[in-house]
Image (tube, rainbow, N blue to C red):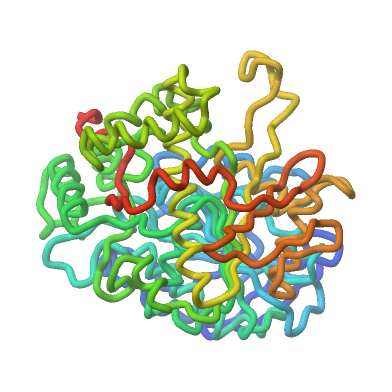
Length: 503
């Protein structure tokens, strides 16, 4: 087997061909292991090594209760499952996937999802080979710290509460300094994420530390301002240390497994989603992300922003009763009068759901968690750079009737990931969305020959390309009446389920 050698600032790495014409370097440390005294501290440079380091197996994912179900199913270009080490506190690794012989090629840096508490670099992306092969770009996929080890705000610690975000910035800095050795152009870097990774994209657009480290951004199922307020961060920390049974002064003396156990005691399972998220730490984030973006923090950076038509049907499927939380959540945000106004607006906008409070609640959840935050992100950035907005509507078909009556489920959270990364048969919607993302990364515009005219997004029209089966279509301000129900309303992004319900 041929060895492909590249030099990084910390030492040489040897990769291997993983598919015809595609080379990968796996498990490259982009920062020092965040263990011991470096636990809950900003990432330090990777420790240098001598000789050549074999880069043919993945580095350990971040500590988590279990490997993300999507990560466990991640596969290579040939369909074989990827072998992943056990999660570890020593997790700051990245992977580079490039066309053989690449030089000065555009770069896409991938930020995985998983609610800031699970997943790894391959989640949704797999080995990245299809994207590198089809679009002649260099792909970089990264791990970053998750859960309490990535996002616990510790009283007395400088700039704590956002170290998972600091990790992402350190990885982007590594890309700027090293990617030319792997055939990439450090001046043409697109950062792309899904779910928590997409919310991270908004944070990076806002972060003064990320300025100049990337040149385009793409977001699937994200949006802005999914950060913890100081009060929320303090509440989560108090709950965490109560479960840990010791105080912040001992946070570097307990084992990583004890930290994970305390994290899971605060909340576990699908209903724990959104407990862990970055805090405005005064360094990586200095203000609410959307405020910074609206003020021009990412001026000149084109943005491609997408959501799925029924994002939160996934949560109702995995944690029945999710939609029933809508009334309580709206009341906590806006009071009883505000709750009733939003519920009435949705019942009027979606009369077919007016007598189905669960489905109506899921629709509200979809907009509150993803739709409205993404619209507001697009609104803010469109004043300073080109923006394209899209929605993924392609249903899941061929499912067992025990899961889906009729074998069909709506497009929901994360279901656009596989077609974006891997495409599909020529002429299929999957092939079109794969090509659109490739065109954006390579050329700065997602328009492709087979797509309808896709104008840039602005607040007066809100033009949105709907990726639907059998073919995409353009719509102006889709579900505009639902969007208008949130106009003028602000709320702190938090959990959807009550933390007290976890005990």
